Length: 458
Image (cartoon, rainbow, N blue to C red; front, side, top):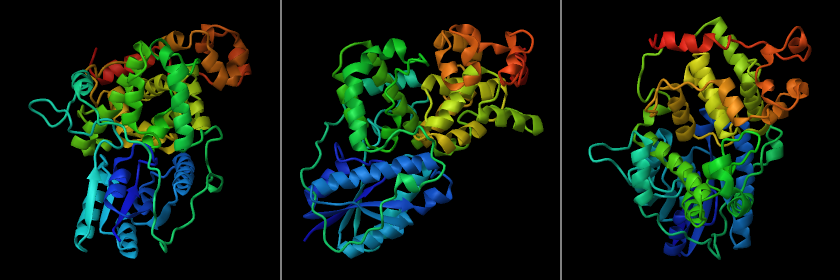
């Protein structure tokens, strides 16, 4: 009997899953396998919020497989070792998996391919599973990747996506393949209290609701911090509980500027993945080195701590950082503001901020997180590297009534409806201190001056 292994990584779904469908088409039986990777845990990437969301995804994937006559096999250890063991136990001749873009994922594929080939087995790696277009599908004439989003988006928009595949009706798994226990969210300490539920079932429900009633307002409302008018599908896309190919196809089926703006954001995700695939060192190194002399020392450490804790004295920054800690998620506009504040106002190395985000973000993705941080810091692909987002001006524009700030900064909730909540330092006397809210860590006029001086801008 012909047997294949389907190795799940960041593709925890049954709908539109090319590796699974290929394994089923070529084999009588398949072993759906997920390995809790020691390498990821050793690297500190297995943060509590992602572990909890992963547990939800695995439970949902197992339930979906069982409804189709199968089950999920879970192992723990080195991925290459565990896949080879399962292949031997099942008598499998081939392994299917989705392609990765990070340096770690690609090295893992290389090691796995060599190990399988040494025993006469074959590894098939499938593209367009975790992104809508695989890295390298569109490239400029004289380079291996696009360094600027706008020309990338033009080519991306003209490229035909593959067709969407349905979920399989049946999955036959060979008997006798042992599995470890599925992890459970309740057993994971340190999870954000407001963390959303994971899994393909919840993700598909959210996608359907978003396309039915949310996406039409996206173009005009996606930056409105209080309205929270975004899809909140980023974690599902990161874990592969949703197919980006399917999401793009379905979004394009909705008429109007909202859908067009949303698809553009999905293209940004692919853009960052193709940059990382071409320049894997940018997960830690500057894409465009600037020789920045980032602030260090005691005062910088104190500023970083205040930023992490949501105690900078800038209400919109503190609201965003508190949302991050409570939900394991942050509004995209708030991500831009908090990153700009750390790197351009406090003038702290972007890597300190990116690390904190990865510690808490449920959608923490090396490509999106690191390269978005670099874009804001001026070391990445932004064509205006000296761009500074003024936190007060941005707050007045994107939270004009102060509702977002009052939701997350209760010390200021009694200030009343209006933009004055964004500048509590203007309160007279002891009113500010009586509310238990700190003074700004840097004077509103000093931050921009410090940045201009450090960058030699006069």
